[in-house]
Image (tube, rainbow, N blue to C red; front, side, top):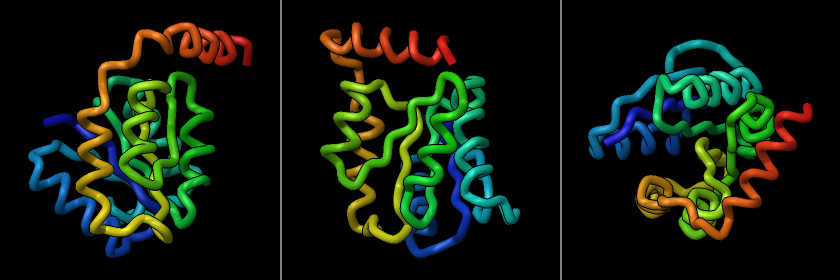
Length: 147
């Protein structure tokens, strides 16, 4: 079980499936955007989810918008966030193992609710980070400090 920041700019069948799946897994949720009953747009949702993760308030985050790219771009503007748009379980696994991603971004338009269990399994079971990627991750940290 983990603490998870979960946000979306609209409530859909996918977000309802996410809420149910994460609840069944026993995760403690911090909600943003439409899931919290507020009108926050995708940029703010991505930011809020990323800030929860980077601050340590939650262990990981999941951010959703129509394409998934908007929340991903916004989340990656928060120093320390490593958001990844994941279309399937293989990408989610790679994002965790090779990129040390800490915010999972999903497309409300393209992600099928039936694919969520496999994507979430890969995301939550994806660690530890592959040691061969440490130099790449250090370079990403350097780029972040140069901003």
